[in-house]
Image (cartoon, rainbow over all chains, first blue to last red):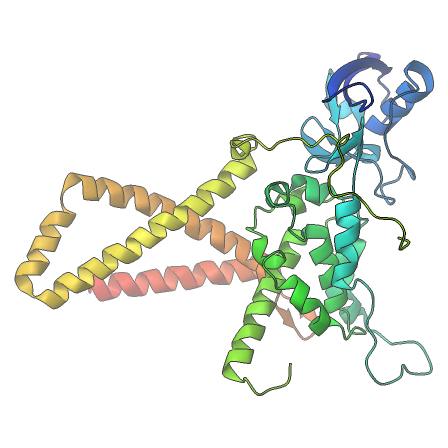
Length: 246
Length: 137
């Protein structure tokens, strides 16, 4: 195994450049080093001006998503040895505006997220004195969708979001489903108007790349298709039984 | 987010990459997706072909013969063979995706996705066999 590997890192310095350029760095190639360790080595030893986001280094904070050799990846869980002999291309996440180097602007996602009410909506009657009880089967119904870490790799992988930035997007819809399928939640009706809109589930054409990219196996594509079925059944029920309460 | 903070819709210093018209050629999965979408055109063609056949049958024997002759012309055969390939591709990809949309729970437990897909394939085989039996039987 070679003892070093080349990282071809996308740089964008808005104060002096109008578009990104590529800069090459030689970093040590160690078995236990992830791409993020390579970037940290650059920052600490080679070039302190490189900007990127990271925090936990253990695939839970969702900060270090970047495009590695064309694929959206969490750089803390993507190992340099898997790309030996290199070079490894490191670019910012696709489908987002680039603020600087590898840092993207995520305000669009942050604005969309609360529109799906991603919290438990209580029933009208007051909550019980104790805790809400839930069986393992009831928890199993939504647990997969609760694993989302908001890393936005799914938005980066989604060509629909790239072409139509108004699309609500995979993670927001999967998170809405996480609450819709929770036995303690009563907010499915209030989420429906946002989810079943043209910019919601119906914009999705089921490319399926969001689920491929997801580092937590959330399967947002599956969540969206399931909700399409739910929304279609609701429309059918409303058509057949117009006087039934929503 | 505090009330005072507002993001600008357009920020001159952010770099906004343009998406190439040929984005769907950049990745195999994108290409498969576009081919799957394109296959809908051939599904529509088979519907049109079936309607033309039904119309010819309704018009009587002579019209039906004329339709059969037209169907036997080389370009219609080539078109139908290509359409069949696309429709089979459409069906297989559709049935493979079915368990993602249909999550069936029985007595609180999820029915395995493989079983949901398998039942779809069985239904496809049974219906196809029924059509063959009706046509040739």
